[in-house]
Length: 355
Image (cartoon, rainbow, N blue to C red; front, side, top):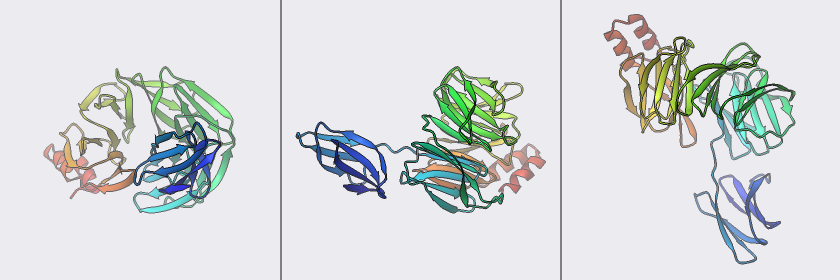
């Protein structure tokens, strides 16, 4: 057995190599040999496995570790060492670990709920209290079913699973309550809040359609239709504007009521609206962070990574498999508002972090 970065590879078992957690938990088969595997090694600091078998063959296998995570406002949940889940409060820089003791396949977080998909079940956790700063979770329910899905989200009372062009809603007891069959595969989904049991979802499809779906409503509502595949979507604080990044890396912002295209920005890879300001958003592009207020020119600063959240003067950025909270002064947009004599909006911007 060889070990790297918290996981191990065992060999010689039924002519295959097994991927095993450091605690002895079986995760998955990584390579099938023609005969018994007698030796195995791992490239230092790289995700390659070399295995040699009894018949003299050698196989090199590359392991790709995807980022399994979920974000709701300032609370970020992510997989660590394949079998643990870390919940991080990005504003207070607090962390708590949940040991699942099994392969964590998907993670979703929403307000006081946390959902973790394991190979044969989904575990739903809840906060001990309604205190916004509470970091203690306990098991609320277990759905003892094996699911195959591309995306997983959780709401106050439901688990939602995306598989290709189907979106299914399950109660925490495992009962399928609703299913939406859409015209194309789902590429992006985001919970945008609402009363418990009636939450709204933004759903972006491969064919360029963006729908709003309510958990208690069987009929999806089309918001926007674009010609390109959807990669990322977000809605403004007041639910008046919709921002979309398509496969051409074009960021398009629409007025939801009139369907009018307000503006476009090129070379965008991820975006987020400010949760404190209806007219302010940011997006990542080619090593730069771009902040745009209203219809003013973009203000740029260098920053590596992908923007996933924007709260006040803090931007949450995913870089190298870790989430960072970056303080971004709001001086530039505040001065832009002042130049146009938009003093009330400038004041709100200064409260959010202007100098």
